[in-house]
Image (cartoon, rainbow, N blue to C red; front, top):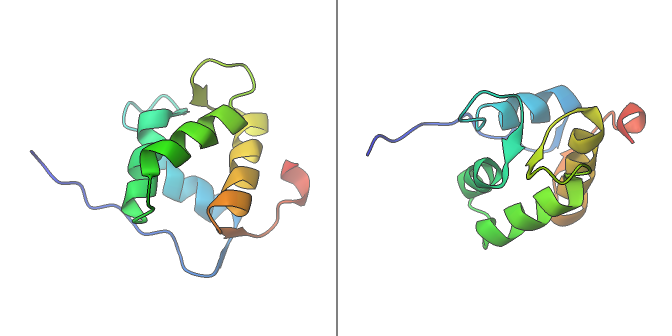
Length: 98
């Protein structure tokens, strides 16, 4: 099994672009969308407890069209809001993404 080394999420406040760039490295199939499994990998890289559960909740909260993944500006904005509320991620410049 090959191990991937991921870039860490910057400490403190991050911009929307930094968060998006960090999250995009977990897009395993490169379709521009984040699935529950890909979000789970991202959360595991942060050593988040119950990553599978929080990934499931994150996709449920963000997936407006219920296709099982997060993509598009509206859904990504919802994922940003979820990360701020439930994962204690501080994201700046959210005004245009709500």
